[in-house]
Amino acid sequence: MKNEIKLVVLEYLKFERDERIPELIEMYDGDIQYVIDNVWGPLETILDGKTDEDLVNIIDDILNDPKFEDYFNEWKEWNSEETDLEVLHCSYVWECITNPS
Image (cartoon, rainbow, N blue to C red; front, side):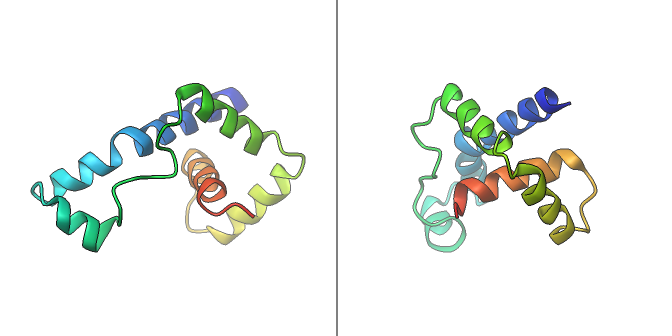
């Protein structure tokens, strides 16, 4: 189960790294300036320059944290509307990356 979750999270992070910004630009009819000013901000992400191996290491660090289960259970409670564990894992890892504590 844990390896399946890691693969799902990896695919999600690869999407964030490789496809999110081009998708936003396309969604707004190629208006890069609008995306910068009103949607995304600067056209860079925290994952820029990270290799697939870097992403795997990030995922491993988060999921192998001794307090992961406690933190993840709190995350599930806080996101009680969401029941899909894959979505919850992806959003949890993304939150850990974008807002490290």
